Length: 336
Ligand code: UD1
Image (cartoon, rainbow, N blue to C red; front, side, top):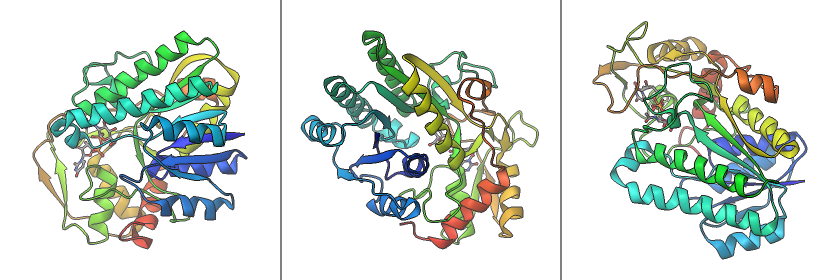
């Protein structure tokens, strides 16, 4: 059974490709390499010993996607492709709306035409915006996003759910990721941001490897135990396992279902820095800097629904997240 993954040369998609292949699924990948490398897919094949047909195409290109659907005949689609830099989305909102929405619309049209009924989408905790109280459950209020990137996730959720209303045979699973970190334990695949990282863990590892001089801790006056921002970091290998469970669910159900994928535990910026130092023995110099606009004090998930319905639970520790991120970064100091 073939599962078509968009954007799987990227961070979360590549780890999910490995998990799916290990679970016995055939994986086909479409990526335009706008923010990724085909080397990631080559390494996924090497790790699993399975071929993963790779198509270089823009997911918004209908003619190209129709050909890919005709060739791969996927049973399900996992949609990872999308622009994801929060700051850039504020500066270039139309670029984000155009790309993230167009790709999704084309994909859903191709699925409808090909009779492919299972759609799994990379959504984000960002859809809860600033409205809900932590821990977020899937029923917490959404909307009030603080940037266009977040709104694209919010809108795509509506679009996909609408497609499942119109076609009662369709199954849509919306996975709301919290903060994915870590890497495959082999150190062969991992997060490879272009330019200076926006997110905390890749910033920490690039400081540790000597590419950046120090970490800026964005605010130490939040209403949290040590004053720094609290997030729900989840190991990307746990997240990938969640996708395999979500696929099994989608194959047996119709309609739209939403799952938070996190650990349910909040960790502060300084706790993560200290856990990293303890797990790796490498010092991470930091300075306290002003708050970053749009950041919330504390974001973490209630993941009981995923455990109850999917039988999935994150099992890897913060130490695993740090050790695995470091293995990837230190053995690939310049990425792929
Ligand atoms: C952000 C986005 C989220 C997106 C996610 C992954 C917002 C509000 N959220 O999550 O939509 O899905 O990235 O791309 O923009 N921090 C530092 N120094 C740094 C970097 C981060 O102190 O150099 C702090 C932040 O203030 C925050 C925590 O580390 O408290 C995590 O930040 P980050 O990794 O950027 O993730 P989020 O902001 O939670």
